[in-house]
Image (cartoon, protein in one colour):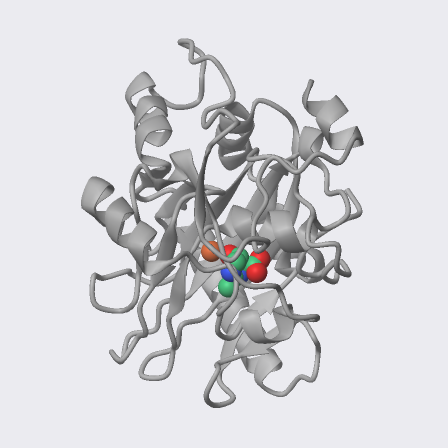
Length: 297
Ligand code: 6CS
Ligand code: FE
């Protein structure tokens, strides 16, 4: 049924088309597998993810792994400062490195991390299939200068700008530094993943050049955000370096600027089901480059 819809190019989640925001019901499962005793998460964790749209796992990496990734991330940051590569996104005001993309392709250490068997088993359970990396990046959120990521659903962007057909993807955010409530951690709106907020405004061409520094299209309206936060509240799953947050592709999330001296760098890896491969962007515009949205699976 889903594949016929895809072949017919039916857009089940139209966005950035109408002049008023709309709410659409989610058409896809959140946890795509049936839980059983051999599942890689507990029944409670599986139910928590289903209801809240995210899962926080403290101490996911051991100290040795963590040191290794921290070193590589610092090394990459130093290299990136001097580099002209288009994989590097800088802060909206200033030249500090904000994000480096496609780290699983350019750094073998991170490629290995993306294939971590403990992580993959959870990802494959939640998505009920084999997966591939749709996007990977490090967000540095440097002390003093790291700017916010405004509220958004990742899926909204991946659908409109990348042609991701359905909600069968998730993100893993791996903390490379201790996360506190005050250094701009990830904020999520629990339960928001169950509805799709169709946003207003037509996407400008080559939107990604600006949106990755400061997103202004594909962001939800204030009324819907207010309602969602009234209903679900805001969670900030923070913990020590080496902890991870796994979150659904459609959960409403964002993060504040970091004016503290403590950087908040995170590895982001997005897994998409191989059953959910990208088609042409639903906006009808040119697809984003493959270092942002992998099309060769
Ligand atoms: O563009 C992307 O793929 C991701 N980045 C931003 C700033 N918003 C949407 C999505 O999370
Ligand atoms: Fe996001």
